[in-house]
Amino acid sequence: MKAKEIRGKYLRFFESKGHTIISSASIMPENDPSTLFTGSGMQPMVPYLLGEEHPAGTRLTDSQKSFRAGDIEDIGDNRHTTFFEMLGNWSLGDYFKKEQIKWMFEFLTEELKLDPKRIYVSVFRGDKKIDISRDDEAVGFWQEQFKNVGIDAQTVDNAEKKGMQEGRIFYYDEKENWWSRSGTPDNMPVGEPGGPDSEMFWDFGADLKIHENSPYRNQPCHPACDCGRFLEIGNNVFMEYIKTESGFQPLEKKNIDFGGGLERLAAAVLDNPDVFMGDLFEEIRLKLEELSGKKYNESDEVTNSFRIVMDHLRGATFIIGDNKGVVPSNTDQGYIVRRLIRRAVRYGKQLGIEKNNWTKEIAEVVINKYKDIYSELEENKSFILEQLDKEENQFSKTLEKGLRELEKGTDPFVLFTTYGFPIEMTQELAEEKGIKINIKDFEKKMKEHQELSRTASAGKFKGGLADHSEETTRLHTAAHLLLAALRKVLGNDVQQKGSNITAERLRFDFSYDEKMTDEQKLEVENLVNEAIQKDIRIICEEVPLSEAKEAGAVGAFESKYGERVKVYKIADEEKTFSYEICGGPHTERTGELGQFKITKEESSSAGVRRIKATLGIRIG
Ligand code: SER
Image (cartoon, helix red, strand yellow):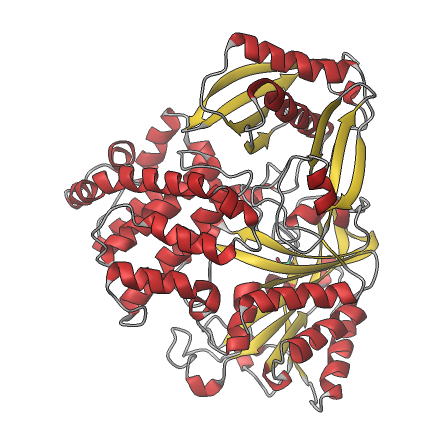
């Protein structure tokens, strides 16, 4: 069974259980300054998990493009990838544990035909500190499912010390069996939703001796052991609490948040613990074998390099190719793309690739593989290839020289500024070569260049809640008006390339080749302010994607399952100011926005301009 079939089966299965299929949100989070990328299916769903009504109903399912920047340096084992597709289903105050566990079991064992004897599950052990008890309810539902197929599912505790103990259902603490965007109950900021969860694991089998051959061989093996014998294939989150000043309180409505990595489900179906051996990577692997003249499995070192190159270039392709895609740069998401490409180039060199302009050849294979589901990759193809080429060329020129400089003990700051070595790469290289580098000194120098705060991206996620404060909502609505105005003034080729909103200002990237003239800027401001002055009511409609597209809505048109989308319309009898597919939230009326002003217009990268804008006091 190919991954495409698994994805399709999953969505259709939950559709048959009354779920509406919704499209993947952008990989760039919207209105969520707490994080650089969408790292799980639940992230774009937070407002709805907190109680906002979703236009598509209370049962939803999707395949969400996800990216975890924190994992970049860890790529190389058999199951981690920075980019992945997360299959998800949601109950927004609708069904709960019983249905979720029943359906999940049915999906795994009947649709995917996974052998139930090789499925293990975990549940929350309970925690007195936060006054949340052991999840015996989930245990009961799992036992019922296993019993139906003739398996007596015993619960066991303390597996970390005592191992399998012939158990089927394992109790773990909040580090394993609690989910919120920001981690454990202690780390969650007030206002954040979360809850205990129940994970499912696929057992590749004790006979493979994976555990015995791993660094964990001196500890007992159990489902959450990191040796790789067990693979987590999905997580059922029972999202029923909200953190408050005085501890956890039940949310008004109990939710289900299920997420399962497509690559991992495919590995279980294939019964191969190496996700990179799945068909999603097949053509990429073959292309890399052709380019490098090496075989994926020829040695551990080669396999490691293959995984890094395959993972990083797939991730970079998706990030650049997103409809809100970003290009390599020294800040924020752009810096992550830069690191991905440069690290891939370095490992490509190690694999013996001598030719230039090869990264785009891999990207072409990635685009071909995914374009049926994520059509934006095909639409943005020339842009993706161009950007990869540019970044690869720029870095290839300095890589070897930089490596020699590093051996001589050159300052990491110079390596960064002169040779384009991201500091994480310098650290990695220094470690490999046993060279000591002074990070403190680097940080100080970077701070002087006022860049560091922006590059501390991996840690940014800890920032907590999405900021849905009034200010950001107003700026978000302004972003819609801005895009529409830019398209009127500069032409319909203008596409949004990214946005970032803080409480103070809107930053907006869009495709356009030239510097805007003062007249054009003024015209854009006037158009936006005209809509604001008219104090128009903003209408949100929920329509099939095809209908939105036909009616000329702008926004990300992604995936192909006939899903319904939310469209925000800003129009009066005379004119349509904006019509855009978007997840919200928005203000009720344009009059809430205040005077719109462009404070800066500059180049962001080749073919992309950047506008910074603010809203003044209310004029409506
Ligand atoms: N939010 C959970 C996760 O990402 C399940 O979707 O694991």
